[in-house]
Image (tube, rainbow, N blue to C red):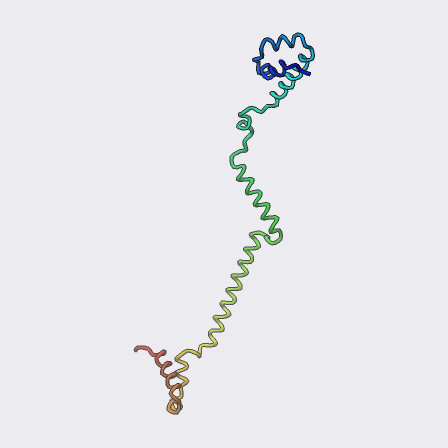
Length: 157
């Protein structure tokens, strides 16, 4: 058990400012001297383990662009894992686009060829199909229809 003078002065001794009475007591008391010696060893070990104030500033810093590359690697891996078989690559999508263009061209040529077979349905053809003898026996509504067709096909000559 340490004496009161050692307990009171121990922190000052470790910082180097203990009184002369403290050192006189250590000269005569072996138990206190052993305790103080153990405390000095422990204090030395703790000082060696202490991290300097600027240690975090001196710590190894990553190279410029490290965080950006890390982020892109994470995103790239997530995309690959989430899409898997559904993302076959750029070549596949080029082939799909080319096949779509060929299909569009084929449908367009089919519609153009089919339009030629319906050429008799324009307004001039309807006017040519009118029977002059049947015009006089028609009702008012058919006269109105005939007038609309005539107006729609009228050309200034």
